[in-house]
Image (cartoon, rainbow, N blue to C red; front, side):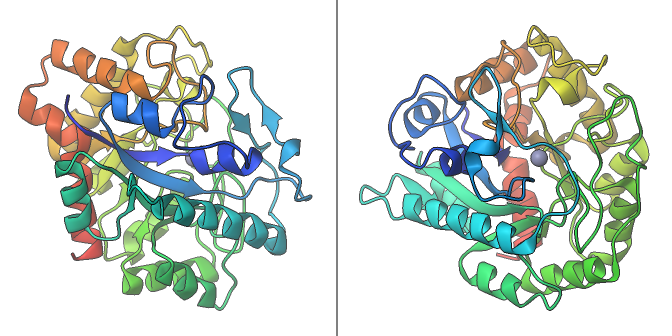
Length: 348
Ligand code: ZN
């Protein structure tokens, strides 16, 4: 089995909603837990810390889908004090997993550690923030989270905040749906560059994308977005954006969510693997095989039945092999491209 390292999951959000759930135990619901990940050759990924959009702290106000995943309703800006409480709880959950006495889950902060973890057949996590609501205008909290091992950050989720604006979930539309970075957003990008925290562009408006492209010294990365040419959803990247990712030697991670894959913009779970292959084909055509990876959105979105849960990643690799991707290409898509772009971004 080819190890798969993945650009995005919301498993910490699922655990925030259900604090008694054991990550190291097998479950029938949700998409990702340790036993199923091991079975799937899943070498880990970016674990997103995300504060839901409601005002009250009770996580049971999340909207629950039939498959057990949750969806916070997109809305306006989030109260920072609410965000901080959620974010600190999720960071603590991640850190507890990394202190597992059997060493089953490794917190990686360098590309060398990630490479070693994959080679050892272990499971690794990168601590990622999806939206910077827990960080104030002086950016001091960013230093604290960096010290706790934060190595990747999307300035915005699909809502406005102090730093910028995210794209709403509408279809069909281009990502040019709002303003770009604020002055605080530009300071955040500069500080992330200094701390060598990867900047994730997956939820940002097109104007925000170009602001980061102009400012940032790091490769441009969208951890969980697809090809707008195949599915015209604003969460996906236009060909012009893909050209910029290529020029910066960045990476785009294929999102498995039906809503961002479907050319019709529907959430039909019957979506065939062939559509995922079509997105990969387009991304590879625009970016080159060195700059395409996976960013599943497990536990944060509706998966095609052909994927189901984490065990579906090997079926996706099989479909790509059937479509003509050779062994070397599959290794790049499955994990090597993430290692490469993280080494360039983190510098070690
Ligand atoms: Zn997301």
